[in-house]
Length: 388
Image (tube, rainbow, N blue to C red; front, side, top):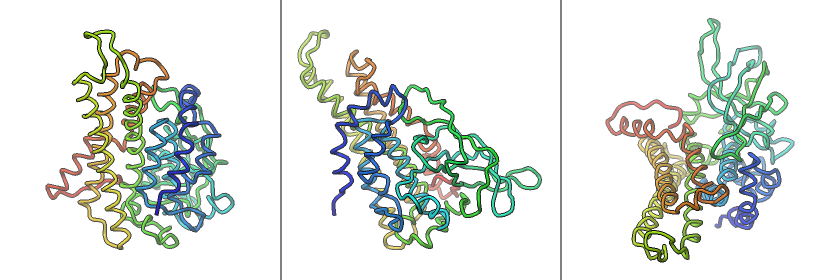
């Protein structure tokens, strides 16, 4: 089998690259680009077959994300985040899936998972109020996944849930004006006393235990993978892609460059430059190889119907955050040795540097926390975290 979506996306890369500067300056991915990705099948890769999806091998999805991110970090980030949400919706109750895709199998879903919403129990479900930040690509979405705390009779949190909210129940406030990933339009989402029926909710504890009501109808192995493996990799894959794209731009730009300082001469003949290229390439390769290996092992466990061991789940997180670190190391090497020209706004190297560093601050890329969890596991201590 071949990754047909990847081939379709590669045909779009020149146009996406051409729009990259405008995407950055206009603080949003153009609707035309999102529609082209819809038509290429990017957002259906992890969508259940019951709703026209492909239920693709997840490694293929992350490969597609890296390719897009290599020419435009913001577009790749939005493609990854909006593209992973169909997988998550596939874990929800069948009634919720019917609402999302029953009339439109190309409906897109955004998110902001931080548990800042207030869920008050009412008959048949919950009343939701809250304001969430950093909802990437939300202007393209018909639904949003948001986190909230269930408030008990004493006004204290008693549970942590993720809930699905339709576009009619949330507002978007344009607040996104940042230094990197500017084109992701990761604006605020606001909900005021919206009713959320029970079937559009999922307890985060059940999710971490790989128990989702959607598994009753989506029986494929894709929906028996941990959220902490799938979603966190969707946050790292674009950063790796940005580094890989930066590397290609760097080599192309520097191959024929002649220095005006340090004695002149061709840059490519400088041994220090050669070493820098080797180091950067090695870091990028290591990031890709480790993340692909781990995701494939998790998927193969699910295919065989085997329990996914905690040791593997922790290794996924260990290598996922290290992959982000490796990508940043590579991009920093390239940025530092590219010279003053890399500082010009709109330069692919400069933009990739900003975007990659912006992506690295996502909570899923909290390196020390993830590495500490791995260490706890190795020492035989209990690890409890929703992102494992």
